[in-house]
Length: 575
Image (cartoon, rainbow, N blue to C red; front, side, top):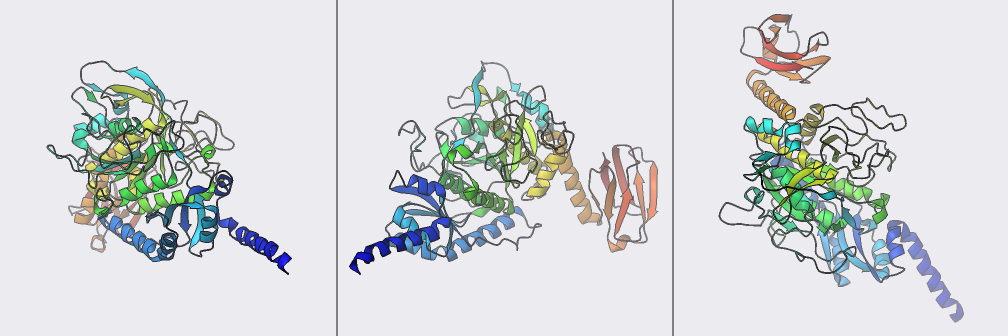
């Protein structure tokens, strides 16, 4: 009997391991063959149900609701796991933006935690890397007179400025390699700077707490767990300049009167899911410098993400769900999530990495000064998850994009990293033109897509049509800031008129049909349509609260709809 005792225990241990192995990432098991401990993310089964969110709420209301629901879920379902980690004497970080916990475990601890019913998966904390910037020394600008960059001119952002909209009242955010906050072009736009003193609370967070194993040495030029912004690479500062930058000599930021906040999620270009989540969580509800007293009302309107995680670095189906849920939660909180498409070129399906592969990410490819797709810009469709969804959403200037680097000089860099900030800046322009759009993520994204300048695909992929709208190379097309802001202004006027007169039209612009909604008080009145010369071209009695009209026969132009003998009227555009 004694002879059989030890083999039975050994077999029982193997059975326990095999029974729980489905919870454990294969990457963890591979790493444990050569090292004693690994960084992991404990992903819990119970995730927040945000179905009670009202799409008509303000951005502040959405942010408060999402924050409260997420924090309550984390506090409720992480109790037993936190007690276990404390009993094991382990340090850890609890997340609420996604119900998960980051810690470092050995093999025995992983097996023990895998038995806990609260845990859905134990994921390896894979490395992320900054999206490579191509030919970053392509152009070194010398002293010269004031200049507006080609990208700003091409998308018509300067025309928007002429209307008085420069991003004022809007906060943009970026998670990247950090930011040199006191660069002349972006210092006055930093939300922590009031013109005489600086306060980094609620405006900066560092998600980097250790040297990445992918770095060449252990000497980070900024340090770790920083209490003030610093950029250990230069990539982040360049992208923030494209969003908000302006000096007397160089006008290079899309929204130069927007305020910005930042978070470092990569150590010299290398990050991990835990640093990614930590920065997103900070943006959902910014905290003081000690990570306390979160204030969701200080969340940004848009977040720029010029980075990706590749399959070569271990990102796979085991962590797709986790990263995607983070973006879903941010969108529900009223925050636009802008993501660069990647720089893997013009082969079909090269948009294949998180977070660009997700439906919920607003993905941006790059076009060059000749208005064609940049040769490095990744294209769709997204094949890696079998969805075949069309990405990117749009394209923006990404070749030879001029912005500031760490020494204060100006360089033109190439990459979809440079294209994404153009769209983040455009979001700021749209909201500054129509503040009621703050928090309305889908409406903002629709405006950008519907006003983009269509371009046919130059790459054939399977059965996908090159002339489709959207297509797998250009998405909906090249962004047009002036058209997007005009659309936002029209919506503002429509909202004001709807409130005042009880009259609305959708869609606007339209090409085939429009739906006109009126109040009961307008029934038995007469609906009239006039061209811009004031000529009556249509008249019809109103019998119902909704009226469908076929407008396909009308020439593209602006028209005025009125309710006869009242002050109710709206302007709409036939495309």
